[in-house]
Image (cartoon, rainbow, N blue to C red; front, side):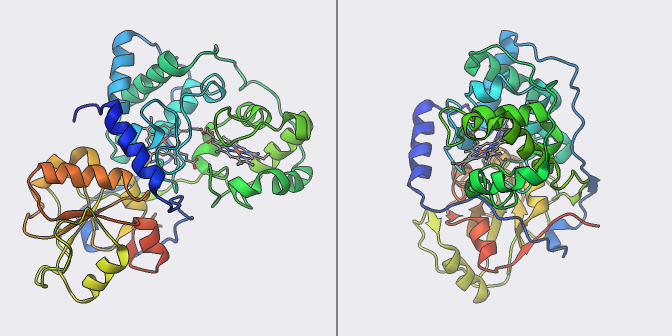
Length: 383
Ligand code: HEC
Ligand code: HEC
């Protein structure tokens, strides 16, 4: 897939900016039911990945070029063509000294490989059936540093932070809850309770971020309002929230091993507008209830599918449509979807159309709205 042009990226940004939907998912209810699509796939224990913190990222030109290419393939659609963030799903700004000068290579590599489970930031690692190896992640970090980082790296990780969580609680409620959620999750922005973030972020990283904020994003600096002590008290509070857990996920089949691709294989064709680019979830659900035949294609990386997907959906990551297409019939309607309604699902729709599929549209409001309406979803960690 060619790296995308800036113009296409701008169009993409404009399209997502038009969406009024909020696509920050709520914590997923865990439905432990299996479904047909899971048959034959291997259970893999996927703890947060250990990261080789000792190996610094070297930004040789070839590595930077590789990172740039990968960014254009997998990341720009949410983080923006120039790392400005907020192209889709409130994805943070990566072209930021307040992030890059403070974050270690290990922190960034971990964010890329492990993702932030429960948000639309996927686990991109090969270990979690994503497309990126450790080398790819370090190439991405090299690209970020070479292209977007202006200030030299500061080692904030060694900073000692001692706070009191009881003092931190009211400060958090006053200053943070409106954006990060009352208990650190479910807010509009970053989930501070996220085990992947908690595991990768040092106290020094957290307190520095709280004190300085992130210029050019909605995250304000709090140094003047609450002082170093207030910030330390909030860090103590954040640390008292849940700890990382190993999750055992059941991954979807690989290309060539798809099963039961079609929902209602014997049903009538649905009455969708043949020219539609987007079809509303309620329209799709009504046709499904009528027994109409169709295919749901989950456009996200497989670890997201493993955590939650539409009942009966097949996993077709947007960056790999051609590998899966051999097993996807052309005589049915295909609804593509993702967590953030249009970014990845739109890419998959366009990729399938290029491969000759005529009846393919995006499930308009996306997976989270589908789930919130109480329609069938599957997946989640198994005991
Ligand atoms: C007006 C909204 C807003 C408020 C209020 C706010 N934040 Fe943030 N916060 C954000 C946004 C947006 C980001 C991501 C910014 C970016 O990098 O693009 C963020 C990022 C962070 C991060 C980094 C998370 C990561 O994944 O790297 C931490 C830690 C954080 N905020 C803590 C706090 C704390 C603690 C408070 C209260 C003292 C607070 N924030 C108040 C919007 C807010
Ligand atoms: C579908 C949208 C989406 C895509 C695609 C995506 N991200 Fe993210 N990314 C997010 C969101 C949303 C967050 C913040 C999650 C949270 O903490 O709530 C995030 C967080 C991050 C962070 C942590 C930043 C911080 O402030 O701590 C990094 C680094 C990152 N992404 C890099 C990448 C890279 C590299 C890729 C491509 C391989 C990528 N992302 C693809 C949505 C996306």
